[in-house]
Image 1 (cartoon, helix red, strand yellow):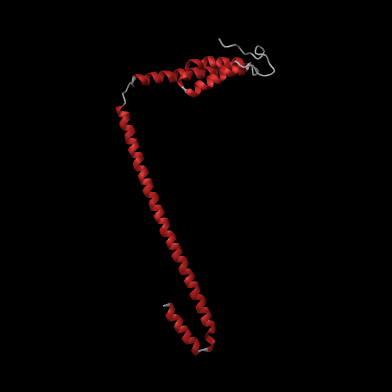
Image 2 (spheres, rainbow, N blue to C red):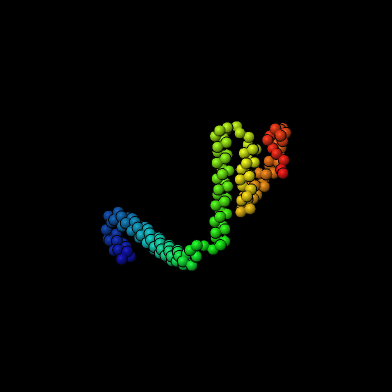
Length: 173
């Protein structure tokens, strides 16, 4: 279509000397048409790519939904297989967790009460008391055991510039 229009315009321009502005106008419109067409094709290609990405995203989400459903079903299946009263090791762990929680709460309560009464309380004495609370349950967690050992070691080392007695440190039994 464009080539036949060009031929018609060329024939018209040969027959009429005043058709030069029409030819220029036609070429400008032809250029605009081609530019619009190129933009439209690029946008159409981009739309198709976005639609493919969207479809892929939907498939991924659907796959994840299936996996989640499968995991939920597995959890529910295992929950049904679990004994109602729990096994003996579950009961022991529950007792250990309760003991650790009670010990740590006791230590925190003691520190809070002491510092509320006397903000300048001896920190070494507080640490020593906290360690007494933690000592029975330190074996339950390697990090807690490590923290206990580091704190105990710091109690046994006098700080520079102060004697062990003045700092409130006590020798380990």
